[in-house]
Image (cartoon, rainbow, N blue to C red; front, side):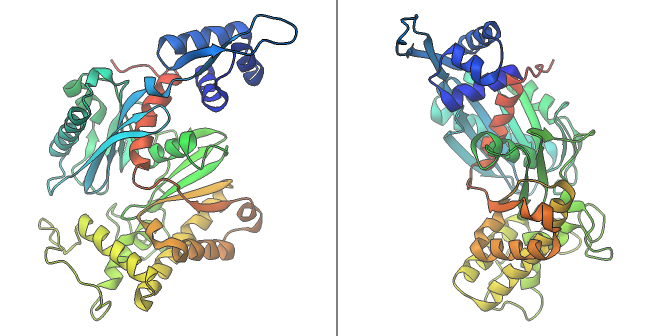
Length: 405
């Protein structure tokens, strides 16, 4: 933890001297000196000159800062229908990225093949080798053990049960790999580089086809005793509600996901202004079900129409936001966070979505925790997942996480 503290101070205050770091951190000067030397040896800190001499004539100290260019890690972010891979430096800057559709075969091996091929294509285009990376971080939409790198269950990938993603990728790539839930990695991106930097307690909540959350509590990412914390999309909102892919009925996700909004638009006689693409149903489903890429396309069309003032689209977005706000009110009552950061597809709903969510929370959340909490959109757009996944590598290295055997 001391190394992470020093690294954060170097990022925030650098260039800075070792004595100043000791003063800010309240860590002893000998320990600070050792930590900075270690970081410099790893290429994570760099000496950039000397401080201005003091009036007392003492020897000016060397100045150090975080060497963002010394950190290169790969972030892999898996969604229900695509894999996105990026090369990220220590400041969270994306140096290059590549996205590839998963196709219809969502079994573990074909998906891992797509991940590896996309990563290799990206690195080749940037003239970077695997050996130059500190590691690879992977964000997966499902119940995932960070400690073991195993994906235990993924609702949108029915054949994924206890898949050792970390070990499989490490064996094929020969490099350290860290794996976590997609919402957890998004929270890391916000904590290090986004709207969570100034908070000790915040919650990030996904929107889109999937709905889940991550809890940063008392300045620590809370994963839970079984590392499954955050599956708020599967808390029951309506006891006799729609059937969810997890097998339960009335899950928040069945009502608050963009899937619900799209399905409402395509009820008989509804939304005649919205055209359903020809190939709109998954071929391997006995019950008709919209494919993820079609849901995304149609959801974006609805959001766009609402922004243009189409009445039916505006009503759909408003109702979608109302369902979403009900769940947020429950989270605020339960956890009392300083901030809730919404990310994902529903950000495209703009002010109509956000203000409706805030209005529902105003009505349903208890006054004291509600007044302490602000609800905002993530400032990240497309890259939050890969930046967060890459942050797994940085977080792991700086907190003495043991490499896998």
